[in-house]
Amino acid sequence: MAGGFDKRRAADVHDPLYARALVLGDGRRHIAFLQLDVIDVMKEDAGRIRAEVERRVGIPAPHVLVAATHTHSGPAVRTGHGLERDEAYCSWMCLRAADAVAMAFRRLRPAQIGWGKGSLAGVSFCRRYLLQDGTVRMNPSPEEIVAPTARSSSPCWSTGQRAKSTTGTPLRLNPTAAMPGPGASPRRSPAR
Image (cartoon, rainbow, N blue to C red; front, top):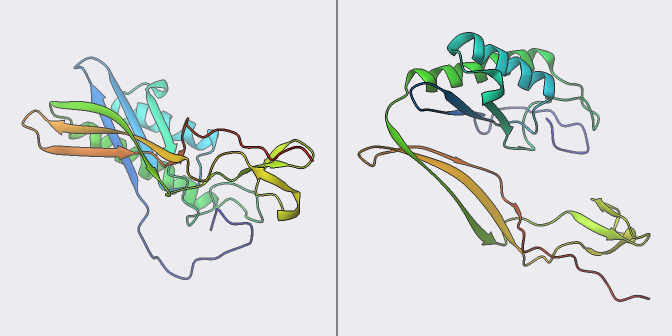
């Protein structure tokens, strides 16, 4: 499974993984938002997905946004951290991702879209640390750390899109992952 620093193999399925799609259009042009439950999406996979979406439903490849939820408990979609990319899964994922966009395209109906953001303290934390040599790095060893680069009390920000029918029925909520927000300011220890 991706997202760790050691090899991990799944023994069973705890939660399903999803490909979530939202297609918007004005009657002439369309755009698609696609969110996959994987740690990240490699450039070649995003290209395969976009090409397949364009072939199936005609949405131009540059009008398809492909994003990952950054789950740390999913398949190996890249090589690194002791993992080999699972090519069979990646091929299957690209086709299922295009299926999700094609399904959303077929189900298009009049709707209203909204965008928003919010914050919630204590949900996540910043893993970037100021080191003794003055550089900043993620996940260093404890003896290298001078201070976190963001206050632990900094709120985490999340953005998302919401679609509802013209009668107000919710159709889709597409949130992003939380991250330290713009209010997170660098924090340095006093000079020694």
